[in-house]
Image (cartoon, rainbow, N blue to C red; front, side, top):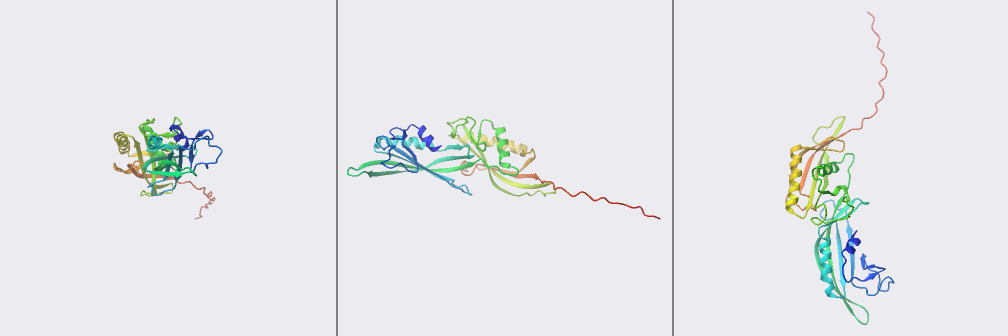
Length: 293
């Protein structure tokens, strides 16, 4: 995904290797590699690292380096790369994972290479934070998928990230410039035993969910949050997978929260799961004899 996205930018002045623009993951081929066709600069090298993060502070990092021997070619390439990866979402449908990249900082890198005649290379490394949005399903009943489905029914013009790939099949999405213009993601923070008393037939659980609304416009994001919160407040519930209710006990909106890292709306409530009935042994036949007087 990352390679294809960089290639689609049409960066000027890139060298050619094996018939393609010089865009490489991790490292470039050596100077004597037969794939080089003429000059070996400019080039772009990227490195994507995704890691588990229980606190969801940052899920990984992306580094992209652009390097040219012509210093005039570097600034426009850096501007394109920063714009292309700042608040941009990439979805891998097979892996069931969406990631978002946000620009953090850029650093210049200038080196001299060569033997008898040194050649100066001018470069910039762009650093991006990466946030993961996995399309996880939780069993036996999925409060995340159920709330995502409810939001989808209320906001049909919004991309629900939990669904995976956008309907048009485009793996790259950027708020405000792509269709649809806004997106929503639902994630699970925790599940604990419910406060409702469980019975022989049903076990109750409490789930705390977070709703992320991503939009290029603060006003649009706020309107989506308002629509969802009003609907949930009025209904006081939403349907689970099997049609049973998820009872909403608490809901709050944190406008100052990061839509990528934290989510702006917390929804907490309870739902019941029917217990699997165990087969019982048939009752033995009881003979009753009448007493004689």
